[in-house]
Length: 331
Ligand code: G3H
Ligand code: 13P
Ligand code: ZN
Image (cartoon, rainbow, N blue to C red; front, side, top):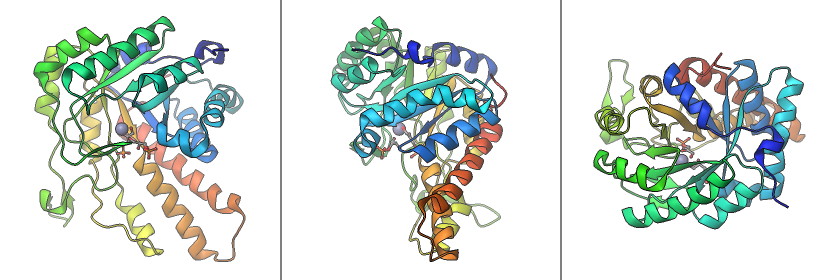
């Protein structure tokens, strides 16, 4: 039997995005694959009084089992009540690649889905996205579409080169599909190696500075579809402190470059009202786990290394909500 997200106390993105655009902040969309990530996200968002989008990718479903992950998502509402402050929680499918996958999530308690047709041609992207929207809206589930291609790996869709979103295409895409929000490509990309060092300049502190995001394209898009909710994927900043800890304790990360936080802060004050962050969390957890093992080589209780990883992750997310997305205190 189908389960509606409404029975579970989850919300869709519609009202959250309206408020975020008006209030000039972005809602955090954090990916989770396991219990510790879920705990860290919820603890951080409750403590900062921030709405949150919990994201599940198809890779996460394969890793953790779709039924178990979904039930973890359902448990989120009860857990935040126990933590003492109720925040709005969206359970969202990240990078859905087929109608069937989106339908399965809609039928099983998700309040929002992304259909990522960005690798298809314009007409096929519209056709697939429209089909998902028509089904989702019957259940008041909101849908994110994507136009333009991000460089890097898009879940199971691989794109070596990016194609910026064409402002000329957005009105037609939004009108013909009926999507509730649109992911665009303006220079972000997935993973921890977002730019090649040769694309960057070196500042006075000797730090590599990547090329700025294409705010000119974003502004053009905002002119075409005023106040329409825009989503940024690939928005990890790849904090140097985590890369340093990872490499100090046996890691081998090279040429890691992320999106500077001031760029994301600026984007958050525009129609960008959802910012996706996954890699930063992976780096924070990995750094904490490597450090724990290096300092306590005899440790073998998972709680003793996953616990510190969860604490570090919580600190990271609180920082993002407070200082980057501006979502703290918004609920
Ligand atoms: O955009 C992709 C997300 O970071 C999810 O990654 O497919 O490895 O779970 P994943
Ligand atoms: P990052 O790899 O930059 O964290 O992006 C995550 C993302 O876009 C999830 O959909
Ligand atoms: Zn993404």
